Amino acid sequence: MPTTATFPQPVIRRVEVGSSIVAEQAATAPADLKISTEHVSVKYSGKTAVRDVSLEIRERSILALIGPSGSGKSTFLRCFNRMNDLIPGATVEGEVCLDGEDIGDAGVSVVELRRRVGMVFQRPNPFPMSIYENVAYGPRRRGMNSRAQLDELVETSLKRAALWDEVKDDLRRKSGLALSGGQQQRLCIARVLATDPEVILMDEPASALDPVSTLRIEELMRELRENYTIVIVTHNMQQAARVSDVTAFFTMAEDRAGYLVEMGPTGRIFTRPAERLTEDYISGRFG
Amino acid sequence: MARLIAADRPSTLKVETGRLARIDVPMIVVFMAAASMIAIVVLLLLFISWQGIQLFVKDGYSPGTILSPTWDPLANTPAFGLLPFIAGTLVVTAGALLISTPLSVGLAAFLSEVAPNWARSVVQPALEIFVGIPSVVWGWLGLTTLVPFLSDTFSGPLVVSLPVVGKVFSMPGFLTGFSWLAGSLVLSVMILPTITSVSYDSFRAVPQELRTGSLALGTTRWQTIRHILIPAALPGILTAVVLGMTRAAGEALAVQMVIGNSPTLPAAITQPVTTLTSQITLDMGNTVFGEPWQDALWTMSLVLLVLSIASVVLVRLINKRRMPL
View (spheres, rainbow over the protein chains, first blue to last red):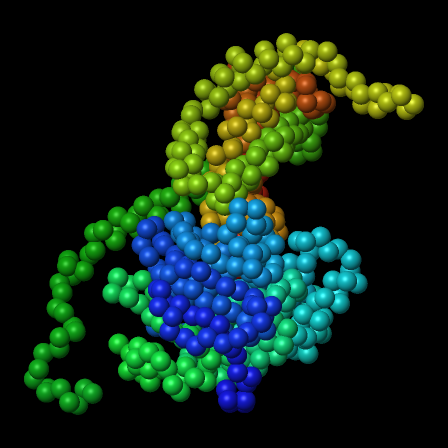
């Protein structure tokens, strides 16, 4: 694995915590901007889980959200594809913009949003069907019926997810559930890639995997970064350091609401964090 | 380890007990309950089987009479063909399943996947009340409202004609309203709660991560129900349908009140038919113990028993093949 120092240094335009600007400002073409959030708060039945997070994510970069359990990283991640809509009692305040468009607007199709913003979950969740059908699931639901088109899409998606060579011989015979944990997770990534997303959200995608599988997923993320914008939640700080371009550190306030402490280029966050809280956490002095 | 314990130290594990203290009364009660349950089932099976074969053993009818279409117990040489009853039971049950299954599975999917909590808390007690309504009430309702409605509204024959081909389909109208359709409709309402609640449970048993996985790929709620949840819940849904089928095939009173009880082979949904159960309840008062006629009713009971055992076996087979989720 290359060290973080060799990665192109990303440029952060503005990071706000509450109302105070704490991170560096730099000139970046606005065209680079993929996702921005403005004062996003999430409440579960009135109880604040995430408070007032404003940040920006550049296109084709990997943002890692790190922080202790309960700091709202996963909840915040679910704002990007409106998965919080599925949780009864959850309300999201503030603005989340994808390519400058507010995804919370009344006219926004959540179906189209989720196609453009795919998600990989903590526990691999292949469908109880063949490997082929798992990958073809999304495109089929959007009306792709041509056998030739689907065959090609399944192959390219599995190749991009670095799974093709291991499964090409029994694509249609083998159930997605018969794969190993690491293979299942790569199948889930292939399933997302087949829907042609722009952004991929990963919620601790390697936490249920062994070290070798974890490494493969990390390599895969670096490759996918060429074409996709990736946001990953991770508990593993080494992982954040290895794969991400930008790191955002979350923690809990007194009332257990998660908030963003600071965000910056991964190399800097891990070597010269601006906040004492961040330094304590990455050096293991947390809690 | 034993060597480390001083020889004179009493064991803390072996407790001295007298013979009486070892008799575990609650255990015996539980064991007796289970044993008597098994004994009742076995004796019932033996008794009905024994009675059911008397028509062939004692009265000299050939077993093939089960599939004969002629039922005439009062003729000089009485005929006990059971085919009209078996066919009637099968078609009335099939009709009820055809009507009830889509409604019940749809309702179960709605309750499990779409309904807000308040709707669930209204519909579930309503379903329980449904189950509690005695079958005679359903039969009475069918007899007083459904049967007259059918005969008043659809009395004329139904003929479908095309310009060039001519008549493609025709069916006699309801003469009296007592009919196969009336029986199937009444039964479909009666089995709806059974199929709904068992299907509902199997929808709930589908892991949440399959739902979120599908929705996160940008599929609609309906697509998720259609392509993920129904396939995953299918063994449970099939079990529900078989349970509904068993209940429908075994129902006597409500069916007997609305189907007209004509011991002929089913011809059209507008015509009267009969079933095994309804014929048993109708005839049992007229027969004399030990006569061929009564033996024929026992044979009908045996056929019903075989049908219900077959459905239990079917449920077992379906559940054995259930895919791990």
